Length: 274
Ligand SMILES: [Fe+2]
Ligand SMILES: [Fe+2]
Image: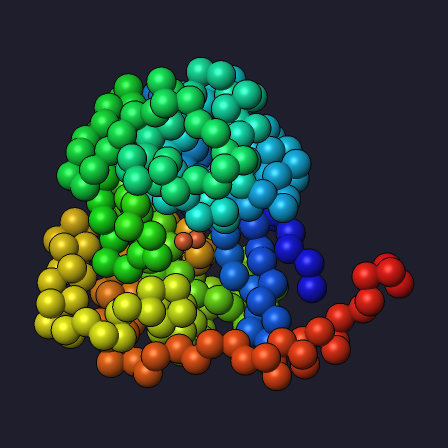
């Protein structure tokens, strides 16, 4: 099982997905999506996983000249979202970075960041990208205090960062271009387990209060939900919100045990035999 950067594909008329498919032993594959919004001022949403940076940059360069990118929106600082940030600051010299200020403070020491290329956002801020405004949205689930999703006010597309993600049982299922191709029960189970693993705090929140944060998404009436960790979703908002509504009542996700680690290591080839 190796991570792969897959072929970019269109999620909507204006959005390309640049997918990485990441294996999770004994579970399946987790999509790790970056997105390119073809606005008048093109916006790259997140920058892939660092381990596959050369492949990610090749995939991105197949759909846009890198010096045409005007904005890089970091939904948060996790490494699966910031893997090619340093290289893109060089390769996309006309791009400024949009992020919550806390995200920049939480970058690793190898990711020194030029603050004069930063445009800070907090929830509710609107930014013009030439032909449309984008609004910074706090999604209902998140694993970093800096997380800012995006609502494209022109198309109604919601970029939800880690929220709504789901590991899927196989590479083929993780590689589909729409969640309509995924069995609904598989999707429900995947979203529930991801919610409890990636946002473990959700199992200790009040269900009714959490429901209000889901209502906020419902009121946006997104035309599509583009999660960093799920194939694109069109017209499935209610089903996806219903999956999350049950998350506070889910049992806390068990952590990986030492015995499980040893079982995993036993299945791997020794490094010196590869
Ligand atoms: Fe994250
Ligand atoms: Fe993530």
